[in-house]
Image (cartoon, rainbow, N blue to C red; front, top):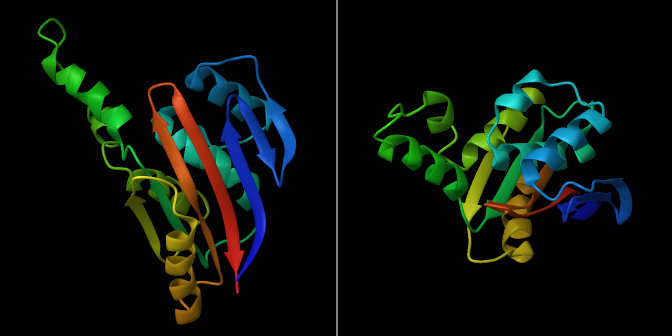
Length: 179
């Protein structure tokens, strides 16, 4: 397998293949994400409705996928916290006695694989996807899983990596693999 491109997002910076593409003074992830979206001139209105984990995965993916045909690109992501950041927000809406109204818009994002779905929809991907919850980034595991997908002929490429977000701690390391 060959790694063709990488994207890292952390500490209010986006790098592609080690080159700084965007940097912000905003330390809060929601502000950084909005600023990056505008600066990078992305056009996907659903972005503004996504939870923070989906925004992180979407931004990292867009840096690599761009506007090419990716109908035969698979997605294999992992993180440690699953969708816990959004889960807490949803639980707070349930617990609130003053403004009890569990939001369906928040509930939608209480599964980590929803961010994979958002990327798949945007790029019209029609192949495999998986989202694993692991204790730590395990590149060998992700690569072995990706190699099985590529060897099976179910996909021509696999976008895979680590997309972790919990509260204000976040990091995405995403890369594209081909045979």
